[in-house]
Image (cartoon, rainbow, N blue to C red):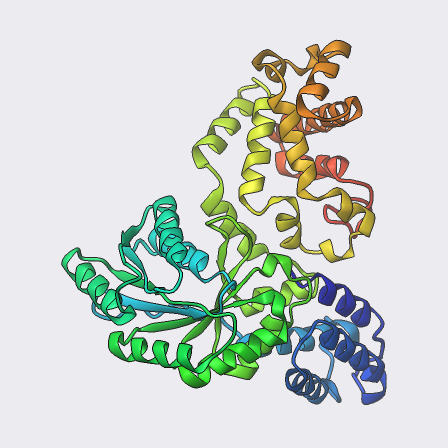
Length: 461
């Protein structure tokens, strides 16, 4: 996400110069480039105007801190304005009402609303420890009711059955009544989507809102529609008292216009963003972390949270004990690491959150896609348990068999074995004295050219 904007802004901000103070003259060209970068990212024009005006006001005549260069000071100002445009802090759901707290989901057809209901219910169940009931009041699409039932089963939350012959208000009231009896904490009501904003749709959802009086009314919108997303959100906000927005499909949006426009145009916060198709791919929206990502500074806090939630601790402890006892690191362990990495958004998902990744050469980024991870996993799956345990036995005819079984080339098998050997050496170093420093140095060797080199690289001294 934000790839194009991040590249353009990083380039623009590299060019700024000045001594001791930021002046109108030495930021003029950079501001012009920042303006173009935002417009190309499909950020709404009023947002761009205000953004540039605020940056200019804060920067001109601004005394530069002794510890920062004028360029760094300017980047700091831009970062603060990005945060401000997106809402400064993450705004959590307000679920303090007398149970059940009712959450109403609104949005256009195809924006990922029903999937977002399932993702949100999983989030509330696992992270907030809430007992959740989901219900579909979409009486126009029988498939929508079935879809929600299937997704509810997948995330293991309760589903309240509904029928296209019923009225949306009756469905929602029956679900809320059921939730009271069954002591549910939260009821999420999915509503009908349309292909465009129309009066009938707005009238129906207004009536539903009035009847059930939800504590949260969330608008689901597709990030890939850019500033149109903000305009659609505004149309809904004029009709309904929205409390927040869920921005979906952000993993497919390299521009970022929607994220930067919505708050300004609607006055409502983005509370969550969908970061992939998987059912757990929903993250709370933190403007400060997103601003940091846009400027290529990474998002280490989100990465740490993700590791805590998704890494299998028992497996990690077992591996640590195994390595420490000198039993070694085999290809079965290597495959486990690949699977864990995939659960955290894959290679590019992780790289996006690491500082300095925006400076990676394009050819290196090309090598870091998730096809590579899938290929490596397929190669290991094509090996026998004995080969995974003792990789040194994999020679000529075995390599041919493994390549054929995984649909890859012999050179791919050789490449994997080489990477595995480097990882194995790194694990040995890690188990000894000063393990972490040795591991960081070892990781340089595992990275494609350009990623680990020099003092300024990711694993620089």
